[in-house]
Image (tube, rainbow, N blue to C red; front, side, top):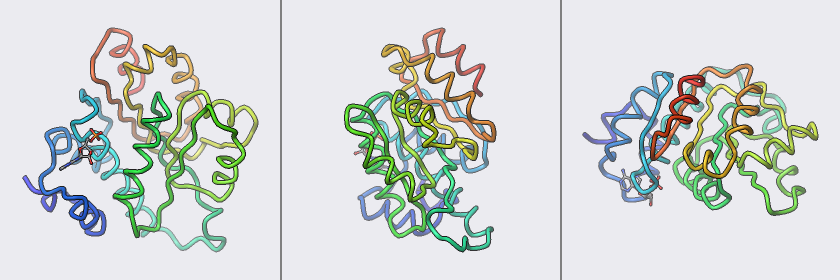
Length: 208
Ligand code: AMP
């Protein structure tokens, strides 16, 4: 299978080619078509398998297609609402994911922002005020900013829970459930995990 056989925006495919991708990995072949169709997904995949692109490419394609169906926003960036939320357990993963979104989505009119703990929140809050379509976040900082009224998740349509088993190991499952409960407009959930302990299959059953 080639990337061109997946119904992904030509701009995104060009960016993938620039990164040297010619053939979708196994998880990409399996995940991209259902995610493009708006279906929920349970992905058993580890880091290194190409799982980031498995969710990032179809999410960018869907959000971009949605933009094309909407009238242009008069006040530009600030009118952007967070439409996709990617929750990941560590700052390192969050940074890798945002870097990938920026590369796959280069030249598309979509904005991706990252927030994580362990640093002052000021610069992240400034970024959020400018508006973003995609938010990559670690759970603690996300709940902190929601608690301060600095973040509204009410327009999130697509929710990705990345490395769910590591979330569990790091004690984040309660936070994940709290965050999920805030997503009142959620239409699609993608859950990725390298292993499937019973707590994660239970969580998957409740979220998907
Ligand atoms: P990930 O599992 O998402 O952390 O990706 C692991 C590595 O594989 C990253 O360096 C990606 O840039 C790369 N990668 C992802 N998809 C492909 C692909 N279809 N072809 C070649 N490399 C890829």
